[in-house]
Image (cartoon, rainbow, N blue to C red; front, side, top):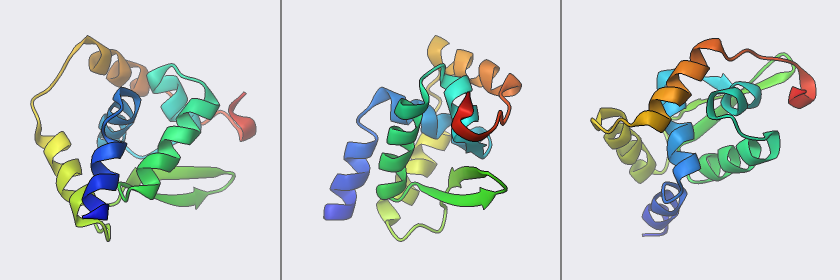
Length: 114
């Protein structure tokens, strides 16, 4: 039951849903998430951490960057199910379209994301 609650709470925030939608497009580092959503580094990191803690994401090191992707083999089976639900949902709006467009131009910009 606690896994379900943790996963549902993680998705109860618009920023985290937007991050999940971006990561369903492609794996990203914090800098790319910042650029795609047009948010600060601290906000991106905090929300990526919440999604990771809930079982949605898996990080991997790529040089100086930590790259996040959807964890389709998550131990929290609810996170996997909910990620598939979000992936397959027909929901689209202006905010998500802008995120997707900015993601096309997002780049890994270096340590500290400055």
